[in-house]
Length: 295
Image (tube, rainbow, N blue to C red):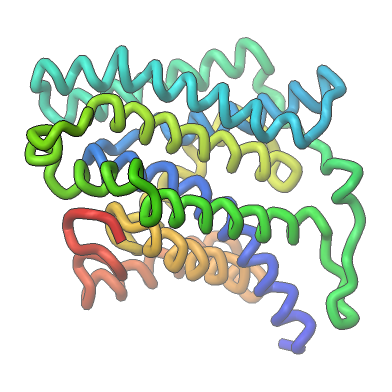
């Protein structure tokens, strides 16, 4: 492998990792706070991609408008799902499996609605004009848009770390994650914060969908295509750990890129699971998992 090929595949891996990290961060926020495995998370990712397609291709608006639009729409849908469905089941003290079935059913229903509204034929969102073309990096030409996805994800993750570890609301979120009952006894409005966190998680999934649109084809099956990989990243990094999501996302992205380039896509996926199993053998809670709390 030449040096240029190594750099190219590294950048490809980081581009893939950027999508994975954004998608997994939203899911791990919800799990770390409420202990809920939101199987409908992929639906919000898919909706973000289709909202971007509608805003840009159908309405003729800017890609930069599609990003906040996808975030707000998915955030609102996430808030409604949490308030009307998940919170109700938790108030009734239903079992964990009931919430799991609710989110699976919501995801399947949303998938069928997407087929009705946008059709079942795969589509590809266009790259925004300002990010078309390539950029020279030491004699290596690389798509501007893919570099933008990497940088955009870095900015978003830095913002999340600042929010959770440097703001009062972030401190309240961590206190609920550590011990919800004690936090509520001290006056914290846990249900409201749970709703905000759930909406933030689904909003991030929508943003990931917008970014993935020009790279991956849009189809109704994408709601569940990446969910297994995302769960691998979350378990690999440690349940409820944002730092774990970043580190494991980069590792999985690089394994996928180099594995696909040197071997095949199927073997790359197998290697991803092999790496996870090897890590969990020595770190049963994941790279940064401690069972509870935030990292």
